[in-house]
Amino acid sequence: MNESVLELAWKSPGPVSSQFMRSTARVQVLNGPVGSGKTTTVFMKAVKLAQQQAPSPKRRIQLHGEPIPRPVRMFKLCVVRDTYRNLWRSTIKSWEKRMPRDIGEWKGAEGGPATHTIPLVLQDGTVVELIVDFIAIGDNSAEDVLRGYEPTAFYLNEADRLHWECYQWARTRWGRYPDIDHGGPTWWGILMDCNAPQIGTPLYERIFLRTPPDVELFRQPSGLAPDAENKSNLAPGYYEEMMAEMEEALIDRMIRNRPGFSLAGKPVHPEFNDLLHVADHTLEPIPGLPLIMGFDAGLDPAAVICQKIGNGRWHVLDEIVSEHGTGAIRFSRHINELLRERYPDWHATPISEPAAWLEPPHRRSRIKIQGWADPAAQWGVDRQEDEQTWIELVSYHTGIRIAPAPTNDRTTRRESLRRVLTLMPDGKPAFVLSPRCEKLRAGLNGGFHYRKMQLSASTEDRWSDEVEKNGFSHVCEALEYAMMGGGEAAEIHERRQRGWDVHRLPRQAVDDLRLPE
Image (tube, rainbow, N blue to C red; front, top):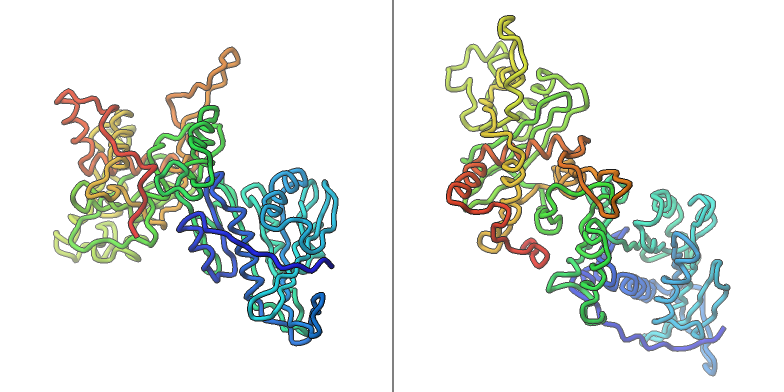
């Protein structure tokens, strides 16, 4: 082996990368836009982890010209990429910038797997034996490729391009090097990097939406933000030139670092910024303030629970999303169960329950809850047969006084929410979403979108005026009704009366804003 000492001079590309370097979690994920220095940061984290591995009680390495063998810290990293073409074109080139092939021993030829074994001499007199295996999945299954590997840790490079089973199989193979005779691994686990994932993928659902206890997710800011990471290593105008030939959906994911959908739809609310508008903890209701609920009726009923907390600011606390075919009465039971569990101080027994008849009248109404629903939910019944509307049924069985939203005008609905998303009172976002609201979060990230029109004769993308009715549209429209009923529709109406163009309201850009620490 070509034994060498390598001087590593590296500076973290930014604060988020520095936090990633300090993590001790079993699974560590660095997410950011293209060009943000993720790959090099993960490689340097692997070198740091190798240095922290406890020396083997049995293994020694004798360096050239030294009479006494040195203790060895043994660490093996398995780097996984989607294809060998991408592995050699991108990942290995990034590795070679820090670890040239002539350092240590390199085995492998382009287009296939490779292994780099490097001895690193530390100041304490020990030697790190760092072994890095480079592999790709290609057309094989993750099981076929990963089943035989026994590393200390895996590095899933560009994890948003890998099948989820790579992550699952990596969890079954980690921590196997060094073996117990050599003390076992001091730390073992998975390192990952990724661009913003597509909504609906397992990476988004299982890491971004509900991060498991043994996983830490580190999200870098937008490449367009003043605090964008690694900008000092990029050419001036790097992102701006890239955007010139890029679809808006890709700009969101690859540059603004926002989870989104494919190019099949145009987001209804592109002003939503996941880094800015989603709280880093579950929001709890503020005592003394009423709950404002929005409802979307139909065969896929949905509801949201909000509070307007002053200075034009909103907290979106909860959501209720039902399966297709849920009727008004069954939906009412879902509402009652949630209110009893999480909002007991706002909850009153609905008058449809027997015990409610024994309560005084003021307990049979929910003056602490304001409900606003799709205006269409107050029509479509036979009054001569004494049928009840959807609003009447849900009001009766929940005890909530639900009123039709001020209007069902599509522009007013969209603008009521859009206005809140673009306001920054006191430098803080007016709209804050609890991470508990998973469907809303996915919908506002692009699941709630307009359909792309199929026009064979057109060379430009055209979008329908109608939204795609899917698992995200109903809860997002319920949120719009809550915003309208909570006063935002009146604000829009007042601006129109004064002759202000609601489509050109002054707004503060959200690319350069993040949630406060």
